[in-house]
Image (tube, rainbow, N blue to C red; front, side):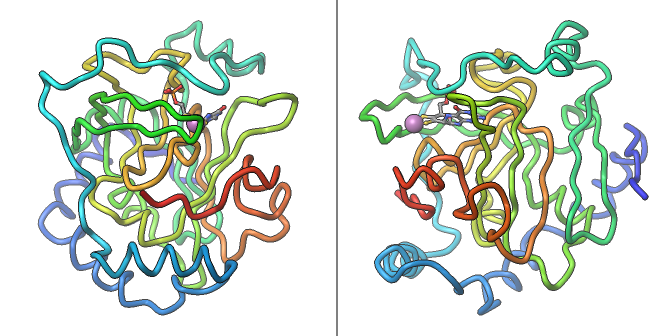
Length: 253
Ligand SMILES: Nc1nc2c(c(=O)[nH]1)N[C@H]1C(S)=C(S)[C@@H](COP(=O)(O)O)O[C@H]1N2
Ligand SMILES: [Mo]
């Protein structure tokens, strides 16, 4: 059964949790050895090295005056799916983010609820592997807050972000581990540079996972699935570019 989170219900949940839900959950997850499983050795070393510098070390944040005058869009700039186009035409008024898989309470969270719950805003630099960067301001609820509401089951190890678009004919998706999921700067952004996300940048909702390269920042996120393993999903390597064997799963910067 999916819980439909109303504006009132969600605000209530946010208030109850506000003082307690964020940091304790973080520490617990950070000590969980299960987040250190899988992957090839060099990638693992990279991950462990970055993590040794501090699991919750923040990506650099910038001043408003440092924001890029132009933030280019990359990968899919539009979505062909007719259901998506219908939602876009209605301003996503009836759209909801689904959170399911290994959670105690599957959720369907309307966009208006995501916009009114406690927010984080951050001005960060986006680095694409293709060799360009741009500084922009992103705003939305922390992923950790949504995960605390849904309640991860103990077997959950990764979050998979299912996207509405296809890139070069294949569905786009991405995944992150629980350290990145609970990182303070990991948010689901519905606003960019002070305005609702444009289609080209992933409307109505995209992941910002600030210590990772650009391709990890899934756009057009429609569903977040908590899983124990990435095997068996799409190509099994945890992401569109990972399945294409173009880029590594762990893209820490
Ligand atoms: N759903 C989806 N997410 C995606 C992509 C995509 O093609 N589809 N491209 C990725 C890449 S390679 C980059 S650099 C960023 C680009 O984000 P932007 O369009 O806001 O600049 O989105 C990432 N997320
Ligand atoms: Mo990219």
